Length: 136
Image 1 (cartoon, one colour):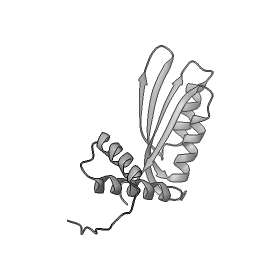
Image 2 (cartoon, rainbow, N blue to C red):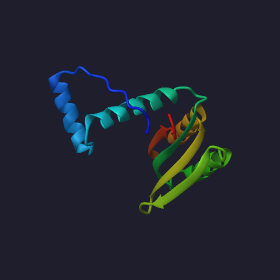
Image 3 (tube, rainbow, N blue to C red):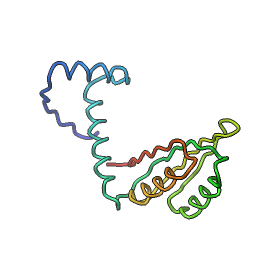
Image 4 (cartoon, rainbow, N blue to C red):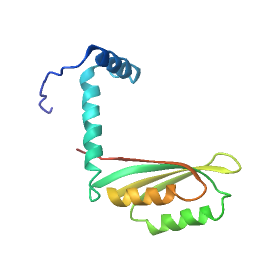
């Protein structure tokens, strides 16, 4: 087991009360694990600011497949990025709308650019990119 370092944190009572309420709602059993997760999240966010950082993530999007030639544009973009796209999942929500999830891996900058290109297409109603790391 990895050695643990203990340290003290000074925090205003009102801020601590709000923090305790949130971590309880999220299911944390102690403050330490919640703080560790916050630190990890910040480290991942900072590391992914480097466009050359190796990353993995998902792009989730909702779109109307009847909009212009959106489906063709999506397929063209996906075929142009077979190196970054590990997997896709496509779900028909109703007659017009689809949910699609792309699992992505590669340089953070390339993943971000691909997500931006897809999210900006006419007919994409919502898209969200989540980039993470397998290790810190």
